[in-house]
Length: 342
Image (cartoon, rainbow, N blue to C red; front, side):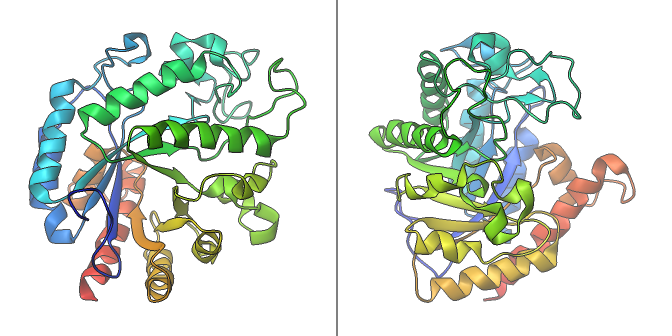
């Protein structure tokens, strides 16, 4: 990647790692990991999922306890620059606004933004996977855009990841603002609003791709593709968005689909090295003919502390709480060894 933010260079210019940043701990061990490990592995991009784990000054009421500080994130940004790694901050937009019924920062501070406020906070996972904010609430974007601006500034970002995966609650009949509106129209409008805001500030938008895939057509199931009517939005959103096409159990030919639709795309595996290597082979082959095939983004879903511990082989192999981290670390090592071997 060049200093002006353009992705150029070798056949797979994006060699990324996604990590979750929680609050409550110093990022100094992560800074050391960035400086000492990521360059040797060949990583050149780090997606840092921050969400509401930062002490925002614009709307401090959304921040969680013991949130990361400006000093924390500026220190991480410096470590990334020193290591030749681009830092891409992330806030989950639209979906993933709760864990089961318990609202995260945005809906905890602004419960009026909730798409389904009638579902109680103590609802379990059998009742609610995760909440969404209402994309038609007249005040939600004023808050959300301020958070995005603040986080992108402190990270000195050129790109911003807006999440947008696994949105199951959209256009709910009991929502006075959304009832009767097609999920695809609502989703496309939200994607476009986010894109336009980021573009106006010189930022490139990244997002997960699952809600833009027809689950029935591709056979992905309702998680890695859309079975709730959002997928037609793929025809109505801007083409200069980078799609992070995540598939974990098997490799689908969907990177080609996104590229054919005009999007730049990165394949995003998790724990299964055979799946990751097949996705890598697909993207490499695509790259020979189409520069929209940018590379890979390894996901983790365990928090940075556990991932670093797993990478360093410090976590018990059979511990249930460490299983995800150990699997992601093994996949990461095999994937990036294959990337370096080309």
